[in-house]
Amino acid sequence: MQVWVNGSLLADPAAPAVRVTDHGFTVGDAVFEALKVVDGRPFALTRHLARLERSAAGLGLPAPDLDAVRRGVAAVLEGQDLALGRIRITYTGGPAPMGSGRGDEPPTLVVAAGPLAPTEPSTAVVTVPWPRNERGALVGLKTTSYAENVVALAHAAARGATEAIFANTVGHLCEGTGSNVFYAVDGELRTPTLASGCLAGVTRALVVEWLDVVEVDAPVSVLETADEVFLVSTTRDVQPVRRCDGRELAAPGPLTVRAQEVWREREAADVDP
Image 1 (spheres, helix red, strand yellow):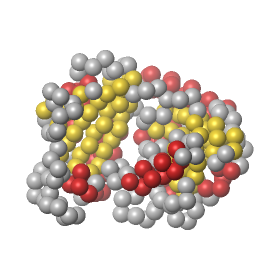
Image 2 (image 1 turned 60 degrees about the horizontal axis):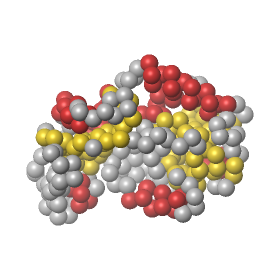
Image 3 (image 1 turned 135 degrees about the vertical axis):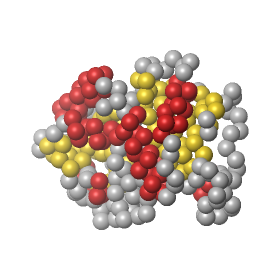
Image 4 (image 1 turned 180 degrees about the horizontal axis):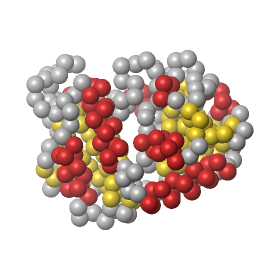
């Protein structure tokens, strides 16, 4: 693993590098991106940087220096032989006084890269009793305020699942803790709209562009009768769901197989689609 902080590559990736008063550490005042590395190259970097910029603006942070981020990405990849890896870009409010108010010091920018384990062939999910707030201040932003996800994921893990699925406040299917959800009904591939409150995932956007997908909001109970369900994310790509709330599903079903095939073909053809 290699780590780059505010322009410098750390000699020891485990060494202390961020001040304890950093607003990202104290109150979660930060945004981030997670990128897949394929054969030593970052996948969809341009799209991820665009979302980093949007998230920072939504949180009220200064615009990140995207050229600096690109330098950080290059620095952490250099010298690492990553056939499959992950990059994490974190951009925080910087050091600040204790409390919710920001200080006047510059933001902190961290880029880290290391190996990524291959995705399991299929997975199990459970729906959780806590809703996503599709009208919240952070909706659509990829922030580091993940405590809600930690609780939901622990709930799922205790039930033998690797992902927790949220409805929103009106009971519509929304998203997972770190993934977007697709499902099939009568041969039609569907996914929630962004108005549901789900994150505008980079993988989600590509799947919608590359396949015939209907974006529609439906009650979360649609998962009880869906013919197929799959998750998409940077680390999962297109991952079939074999069990949802105890119900067994085809994993993969025909539409999921098609999505996987298209994903592999397009990913191999263009590292920055």
